[in-house]
Amino acid sequence: MADRWIAPDALFDGAHVHPGTGLRLSGGVVAEVGPPPANARRIAGTVTPGYVDLQVNGGGGILLNQTPTVDGMARIAAAHRTLGTVAILPTVITDAPDILPRVAHAALAARGAEGIAGLHIEGPHISVTRLGTHAERYVRPLDETTIRIVADLRGAGIPVMITVAPEAVAPGQIATLAATGAVVSLGHTDTDAATVRAALAEGARCFTHLFNAMSPMQNRAPGVTGAAINSDAFAGIICDGVHVDDTMVALAIRARPVPDRMFLVSDAMPTVAGPDRFDLYGAELRLRDGRLVNDEGSLAGAHVSMGESVARLVNVLGIAPEMALRMAVTVPAALMDLPHLATLAGRAARDVLTLDDGHAVTGTLADLN
Image 1: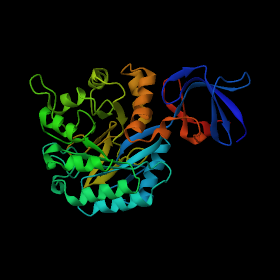
Image 2: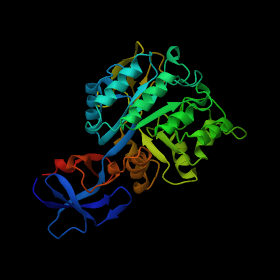
Image 3: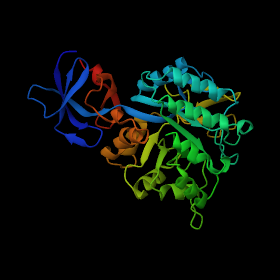
Image 4: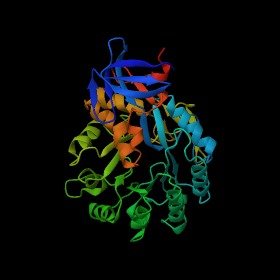
């Protein structure tokens, strides 16, 4: 790709949205960001680093639990790339004891592969009263096997997020996990605010899909939800208009006492960029009116992309574009200590998105003629 300048209406550099700023491509890579020359290629909309999704169960018809291989991870990452997400944490959910070691082996083998930024272990060490779509028969307390797997992954330099319920861990186990450098996230939990604060003091520093699968916020009992919102910890949230009411998403974003602690997750299932149904724990889940449901019609997973989530934040919830983009790029990259994912300089053109005036993903810089 020849040297050329691109001048979008706005440019998000991983920190701020800048009007009137361009970038120079050289050899298919962003070589410079700055004032564009008069002969720059003008394009409408916004340019931004590609999105970073820390909770991806599947995509393109693949569920990680059922395809716990390097190829499975790569196919999931490739499916989400078509929708604007350039880096994911493939997410293994609660399952039989042999599944996590197989996924961990795949994560080790996939180290450095395009789009695979690490691993998210969500369960099986959760509360049986806040299961969500997880199968109760596989839930168990945190054990030495999982701790050893996390330590091995971190020892190999692989970023790890692990979701646990405080009810499922013994005193000191969160500190042990945190000492490896893993991000310990609290989720699928029915505990109280005092227990949450103790878990945060021990080393937990994130919450998994805020509002969902956690004790609610009430006037005399803040629960996990209230404790999370009032903390300085990070929190992922699903913004699809289904899992959490739009008003509650906006309230949580604006109520946090510390900025840059909220980030978007898709919690995507195989139907994203894939077929309209799949099997989970032997039951068929299908899309119905844009919702993933089971045979009883109950909500059973997420069907949304990061691109759709960003556009919804801006267009429906009225969140400022800069904040929405930080939630999809900057904050998740910071949480997992992957700062290169929140920059433009040095990025491949295919990792830089173009957005239209409604903040929908239209492609990447590599697609420009």
